[in-house]
Image (cartoon, rainbow, N blue to C red; front, side, top):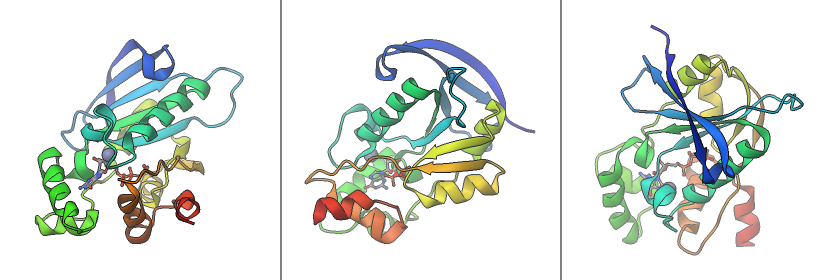
Length: 205
Ligand SMILES: Nc1nc2c(ncn2[C@@H]2O[C@H](COP(=O)(O)OP(=O)(O)OP(=O)(O)O)[C@@H](O)[C@H]2O)c(=O)[nH]1
Ligand SMILES: [Zn+2]
């Protein structure tokens, strides 16, 4: 059964520049996560395909502003971008790249003992990255957003959405927000998971 929109709830969001946005929920997603979309309509003069970000939940970064990763600033950037140009942020309940919050926090302890972010996952018996983007693609189909510009540095997201029939006209790089605490995490993503993090080399040079 294809996914369909369950409800569209208008809300005013300070992180979307005080604009009104719709929070959209869904029926029949391929997995049981309570994924939702933050949707801002484009202005009628904006003819470019809508900008979309698939944002994987990171409670520590998104809510608490943890300096261990760059999720919080990336979420802010995406919300600002859709406030300016219209588009959607799909908030995917994939905490810890799919392993959950408690497990992610366990891997932080291992990372403090000098293991990289992917090796630490394996040390607790989990995959490097347990996410898939089937629900994200189903949400986009349900919203009629099948021709998009995608805001990401992660080639997996691009590849997978395309296999689900989403046309990506442009991959728009998301910012890289380097701090002393997250630089190892960012370089592991670039070196071990193929993320296109150009600014990282510049920052390190
Ligand atoms: N297992 C694990 N997950 C982490 C860690 N740090 C952040 N995450 C999770 O990683 C997810 C974000 O993934 P990233 O690899 O940072 O970025 P991405 O979403 O793949 O790529 P972009 O679209 O370019 O941002 C969120 O679900 C975070 O909770 C970590 O050290 N270990
Ligand atoms: Zn994070």
